[in-house]
Image (tube, rainbow, N blue to C red):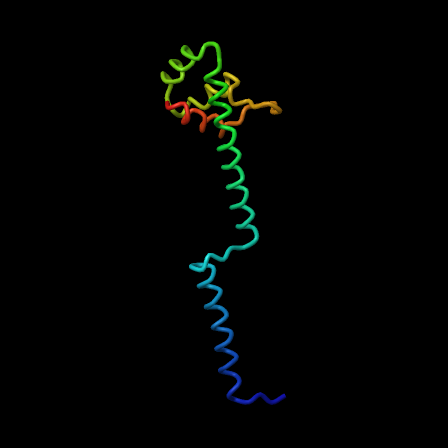
Length: 114
């Protein structure tokens, strides 16, 4: 098979253009792989769940009979331990769950203004 000498540079140009298009598309064009898209969707889903459930935790905390004492205790401890305090108190264990949600507890502590 004889290929015209004019076709070879055109083919290399097409290959180079395709590579350049892919590099620019993934680097600056916002293109993502299927795995990256799945990971981003999971992160957004988790954030939405926490945003929806943290107000429930805060409301349960505020409705507790010993809210004054609990709030004083919560403010005494360091911010990185406040989520664990809310988990132990049961406020981050939501209806239908067997165990507390640590992300909800941390967001709840922030909502309580500590």
